[in-house]
Image (tube, rainbow, N blue to C red):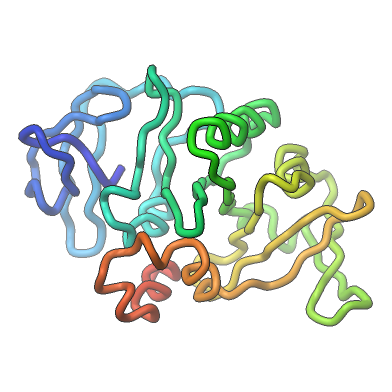
Length: 228
């Protein structure tokens, strides 16, 4: 995770200092600051949390997507009982969920409904598909320039469901170092896709909540998103 409670204040690991201990604001468990030249994060110490269904341990990929965001818009907890932690409260009245592992369709639907009720925001999903990209997920040019039809067997039903609903937008990360995502949607029972620049994604969904240095120099932010 990027943020933990240290000396009664929410801090990033690099601000607290290497080896310092804090408390996870979501689980209330102890975490330790790991501060290296490339990665800075908090990690649980002895006791690991039991994640609710659909949640997953943080990876370097998760941290990369959140690294350019101001603290107050990053890892924001909602609910009377800390039911959900939004990865990013994004620009243009959105919640951005960064997801790598598969989820039961009931859980992804519940998360979308929860955020819509709690925040009245549209939920934007960014999902890592490197595992099956070009193995069972293929693009075929459609009649409309710049758009593709998707051949995907067996498909992941929770992603197909998210692409079907008008209440969410679904973007797929097929290569971490590439400067493009895939925006996918369902129309007349078929999945369609188009390439979407990470710069355009940042400008639409992240610019207003990014740290000032990344608002000034967007290309630096895109470099972070591409792991550079």
